[in-house]
Image 1 (cartoon, helix red, strand yellow):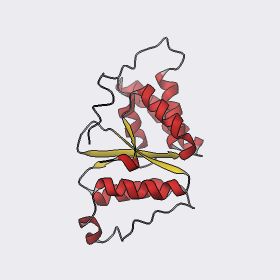
Image 2: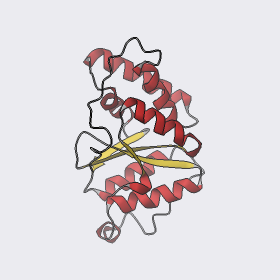
Image 3: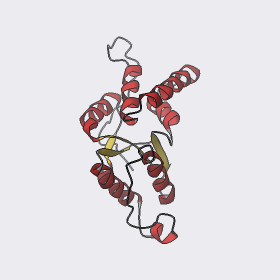
Image 4: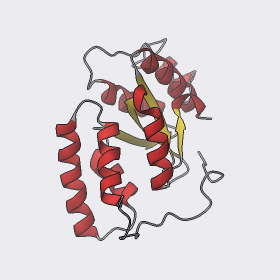
Length: 177
């Protein structure tokens, strides 16, 4: 999955004079990908800050992906539809009133023989949208990986703006190809 057309420049995260620091933007991102769960966002933010301090990493999005993986975000091999379904289902399990009808049984091998990543994203996007949530796909470091998270649909514009500010190449789940 390539997003090169959106942000040809490398991300720059060293603008210390900005009123809107990378750290505050990461905090906003964590709030968005943990809809209704500020406690989990705070827990992840604490781990994020520790990791940034320990690693001295210049790519905060990579660290966010590490500290939120399978809690508020996912990164899975693009050829592994079973793990993609499991990852999305794990994120959805945060809300007791939200379910995804996969139009088949994801525990059966036949289901995975007849489906690919873009179709899984599309089905999940459509189902989540009915509940007021949006499934996003974001560019990962490796091209053969699907990565994403779920936000409240009312925060779609804020997510787009924040992604642009942080240099995150982002697509709606329905736009994954």
